[in-house]
Length: 231
Image 1 (cartoon, helix red, strand yellow):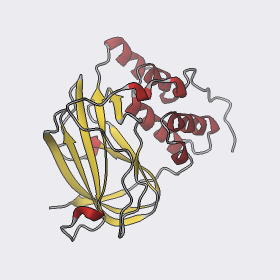
Image 2 (cartoon, rainbow, N blue to C red):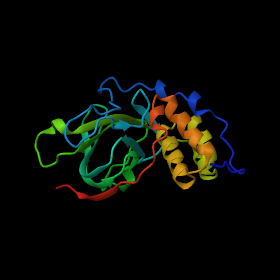
Image 3 (tube, rainbow, N blue to C red):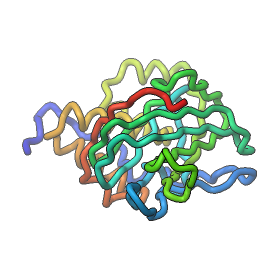
């Protein structure tokens, strides 16, 4: 593995960013980063890549949620739900993961049909349910992880900075605003496009270690082929 000469490490340590200082709304229930061990085809250890508080900030209308699956899965159904701060359902969709290798997967909300845009200064509670046994009505074999998203507004100056900055340098700006979802997405995309870049690997590991997910840092990033909707 060779570190490229033109790669510069961002100045702001991700480990010093206050990812974990956010508190989920008192009117809602706490999130759950790791799905409980289950029986059948569903593996234990499925984990959402979110802070320990389970609430992460974003400036995006439709961010990407990353989660880790420890074993390969084939032809399983996934349900995604979005609720407001008082757990009122806002959106629900079901789709199939045709084939998924073990590793970290990104669920891009902008790719989900009719997914609503998040409003600024608003908390949202999301649920991701992996239905390993979709033909049965018994939900006990499902894996459920959930977390919180708070969308914040950026100033025109900040938006201009983001537009004029390369992704790897943009990490500084994300860290300053504690934008968790943008930081994870940017590092994941940089890892995929620069798999041998040791600085990016170091930053990815630093980020996950800062929220107690260092054991997931060495795992690969994988793409899941999505099938049609479950009717």
